[in-house]
Length: 94
Image (tube, rainbow, N blue to C red; front, side):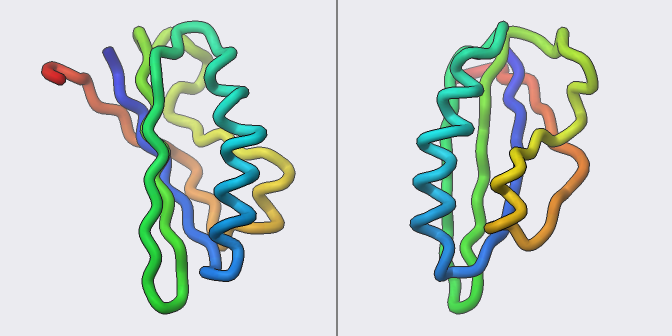
C-alpha cells in the first residue's frame, strides 16, 4: 500500500469553507479513483494560517504522473501556495 501526502495552506478565515469544499468535492472524487483505499484529512491552525495534510492510501502507484499534485479550480479561492508535487511512502505497518 502507498500513502500519498499532499500539503496545503490557507488563511484562518477560510478554514471552514475550505474544509467544507474538500468534504463535498475532493474527498468524493478521490473515493471514485481506481486503486483508492482510504484517506485521512488533517488540519492545524496557528495565528495566521490553517495548514492541511491530505493522506490518501492507494493499492499502488500505477497512475499517470504520480508525483504531480492535483488541484481543483476552486482551490484558487482558498489556497496560498500550490506545491507541484506530493510525497509518497510505502506503508509497511498499520
